[in-house]
Length: 195
Image (cartoon, rainbow, N blue to C red):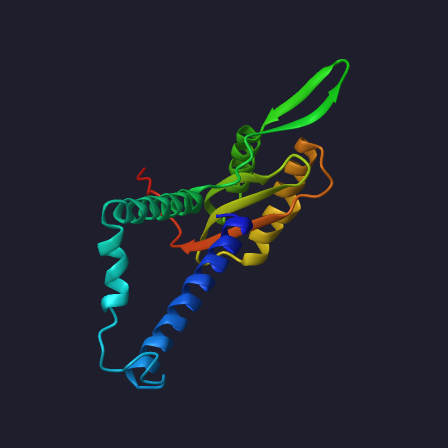
């Protein structure tokens, strides 16, 4: 999930939360008799004649309007669900463009090479990488599985001192923000050899 999707989620949840808080506060206030009896009697049902009247008057097409509003809300919900899984993964990068031609690189091969290079360190059990962002502002996200007894300084040196500089060099960019999620596991046991 990218930053834009996360901001949209926070805004949507804030609006839904505020709406529910306001509606529940109004219902509690009405039930407690905070409103004058002429406006909203506390003992009268919420769905009274004034609410039922439009349904009786506009019976044939009011239900179609409600159904259309429900479909629109369902489509918004579906769009929201699809946005949760969307990633701004960068598939390819254009390194150079000119009269002689265009130079493009598949970022999948670069991230595969970076993950393989990270995995050459003895402390790193497994590594994967993804390029995200845009051509102008590429970034890398890595997932690294490290042996529990490994020093984190060695892992940080492998990623920050070897892997990321090689990616910057391959993509011909001066700056490439990187985020590495590190998880710890037991070191794999070495098989015994019997002579």
